[in-house]
Amino acid sequence: MAKTKALPAGKSADEMGRQQREISVSEFFTKNRHLLGFDNPRKALLTAVKEAVDNALDASEEAGILPEIVVKLEAVGEGGSPPPPPSQASRFRVTVTDYGPGIVRQQVPRIFAKLLYGSKFHRLRMSRGQQGIGISAAGMYAQLTTGKPVKIISRTGQGSAAHYFEVQLDTKKNEPRVLERKEIDWERHRGTQVTLELEGKYQKGRASVDEYLELTSIANPHATLTFVTPEGESRVFARSIGELPQPPREIKPHPYGIELGMLLKMLQDTKSHWLSGFLSGDFSRVSTATAEGICQAAALSPRRRPRDVVGHDAERLYKAIQSAKLMAPPTNCLSPIGERAILAGLYKQIKGDFYTAVTRPPSVYRGNPFVIEAGLAFGNGPQAEQPQAAPLAEGESSGGDDKELARVIRFANRVPLLYQQSACATYKAVLDTTWRNYGVSQSRGAPPAGPMVIFVHMASVWVPFTSESKEAIADYDEIRKEITLALRECGRRLGVFLKRRERAHAEFKRRNIFELYIDEVVGACKRLKGGRLAEVKLKKQLEQIAAKLTGGDKTEELVSRKTGPEGLPHSIIVTAEGVEGELAAEQPEAPAPGAPARAARKGR
Ligand SMILES: Nc1ncnc2c1ncn2[C@@H]1O[C@H](COP(=O)(O)OP(=O)(O)O)[C@@H](O)[C@H]1O
Ligand SMILES: [Mg+2]
Image 1 (cartoon, rainbow, N blue to C red):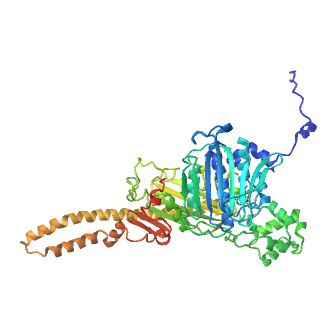
Image 2 (cartoon, rainbow, N blue to C red):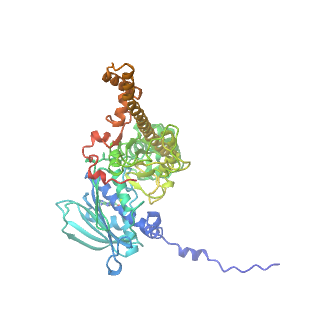
């Protein structure tokens, strides 16, 4: 018989029991900081800026203040040495200042040095932040990589003093430690400034701080953003719309959206004394009559105390709720960007010949209302040499040499999403759209080709992100369907524009050829008639015929673009002569074509 090798003595349940202990959220996220977007120095710098700017935008809007935000990056030398050039620096000081409402003194330490602390998690209202783990996580990362505390200045109004704080997070307890607190003089009468010193890498290009600010300005044309680069340059993204978006309203949960566990918790927490009162009071779209109906279907008395509804009773109640006929949730909790504002944002930031935008009607996934918006900028701008932007003939696809692919810019609640593009429902919908139908070439499994920027925005009280770092939108059928519908409408308008432009150019060319021969024909006729001919009259008649055969005045108008983009609602067409459409008519604030602001617009 083979002898089994003796295994080392195992641990007893007692020993194992002694090793169990609680894990604080801060300890958890210290080990898992990639979950929050701090996986590498370049991304960490971006995430820190993003968290502070998102908060500044949220707070300003909530207070009814037009956002005005300054982002400053400075390279910092290590151990007291002078700062290296920005491209080589590995440490940065990030300072974000806003003119928002400020923060009351008592809240400052917990906001900046306690994870999962915030004002937005427990409400159903559209905002950029949700989890209460944004700026505090950035502060924790800063502390972890440089040991430096977070520095905050905040002032809530002319009547109160500005307060200066230095705080650190005690990761074991997930509680703030205040290192310094004092009143100071501050030139601003209101607002918040947060300064973080962290390990980071500054590099321009895709998914950079520059790109984030540029895209933020597109989706937030009501905000003015100033970027003081590590090189000391100041870049201003000025607002192109002078009014705040409609403030979103807070809503109660819609019964279709909740899970059983959530219902159980709500039954325990409610202030209502009766079950029917709980149903109609704590949910949206449940009337008193519907509430009574639900109680009846669940065989429960409407007068039951909510707290006593547990076990099987609760399960029956849950089923009855799910099968009740209810109106879709209200959508005034959403504040979409709007077609005009998207056009203004795209036009300001991206060069092109054609712009269009679509806001879909509200829809619902898992009980959460949402709105999808899409936009499109096409072309290189009228001044550019544009061999690639030449319109395609019907059925023709551009040759293999045009490899420039469309750039997809994604947003959730007005925040640009810069990572994990291919995991995002928006990008999948772009790939799934048959762009060939609209006169643009596309290879299988790729975005369409051509000088084009595709914009997609999802606004919702709860955006279903695929992870805590909020980079990609989960692929719910209802969401994907709405994105696809919005993209198709943009594509259809682009197709109309391209076809129109192509036809007009072809007809115009034909007319020029006809006109070239008119003088010859008139001369020949004159010779045939022995010199007796009303030359001028014949010439005029022939010119009229040529014009008629080549599309008449319409061609003229399309080529010289004296008319607006008829039949293309919410579109702008830009030519060397000027701008037509939505923006030209309604955007006095927008810079005129050729003005310096436009010349500074970036390409793709
Ligand atoms: N610049 C600011 N101005 C006013 N309030 C702020 C500012 N930054 C943060 N806050 C408050 O601090 C809270 C926590 O912020 P954060 O940790 O980013 O979480 P979230 O934004 O997800 O709520 C916010 O909910 C907000 O109430
Ligand atoms: Mg936040």
